[in-house]
Length: 192
Length: 192
DNA sequence: CGTATCATGTAACTAGTTACATGATTCA
DNA sequence: TGAATCATGTAACTAGTTACATGATACG
View 1 (cartoon, each protein chain N blue to C red):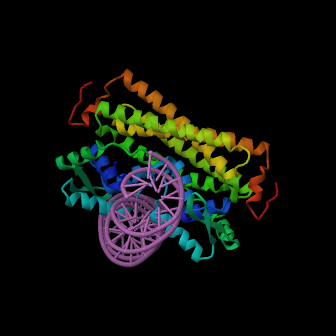
View 2 (cartoon, protein in one colour; view 1 turned 45 degrees about the vertical axis):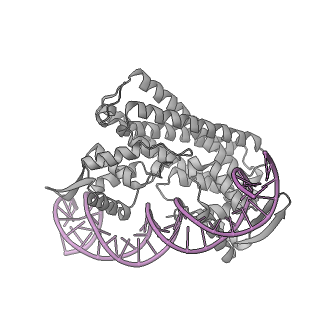
View 3 (cartoon, rainbow over the protein chains, first blue to last red; view 1 turned 90 degrees about the vertical axis):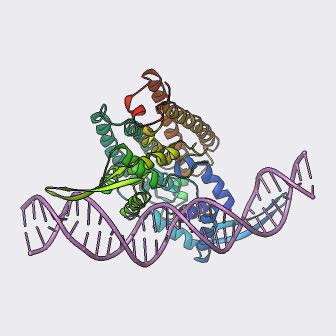
């Protein structure tokens, strides 16, 4: 029964990967906006302030020549702990593509086995969706209005592609079992 | 500069396809929740009330044997006009997958040429995203933390699949130029 | 007769956007 | 000096969720 991904943990997770400024976080998320959407500054900056007040991150002003100064946020130990507490929560049964993408971005906070489990869970969920969509596309082929027919076909294409990606990624992970960073990001350092 | 898809027009569009109840709208959207997310009753019912007060839909209680009665909503002429006014608006440059899917569901309100244009616009947008993602995946291959690398790879796979779907759908539409329903849903009845 | 599903609704809250404001730096 | 980009921020608003409440019908 994991809570929906508020930008809170997404931001915290991005800071954990590397100290950054709010502006840079925005820039990064904008590059993926067609998949996850990117939060406005009006929610991003207050989020950073809140994280700071709770002691999950620290700030430092970094003046630079030739550009205005930035505020660089760095995660604290308390922040790492809070983040781990969140990523360890199981995902809801009906996870949206958006939410999955967000968790994927933060997956370096997962242990190796945690990542595998996450991907496998996703795989079984999307498989169900694929079956449902295929039934809908086939059964309502002629009678249905074109809008829904198109939408179902589109969804089916994406589901199929996602499953293919999940399979190849899972296989890749099983071959080269320990990409450095997966362990590095996680204090638990789970067994292979 | 189209506004973000509030559930308002999604609901109105679904009613335009076929008179339905709030409960059924919820059920339908839940079946696609992994792509678009489905609104809660707490936002769905107030939305229906608002549409009704504005005269965009009418309600009728439909009692049935063996099940509790439902309220069936039907679109009005004013509603059709409002819906067309919305679907005719151009989409924003950075349209999310979610928004595209929503517009796709409502695409039977578009004229034939409008649909083609919509798909072609999407095609050029996703092409740009694909190029960007490919660059990111390739350039940051080794140094990058695994989370982002995975996320970019996932995004790239989806972008590629979407482009393939767009191409095949556009070709299909150009071959059989007028699927009945596309015209039926639109009062403008554009030229072939 | 209690529980499950179907079906609708509301009130309190939270998360988020929009629109604005500020200021530094660069470039024409 | 005025515009463009970089960078941060806030206040007012809107959209949405969560949690609750109601009631009908069916099933065991």
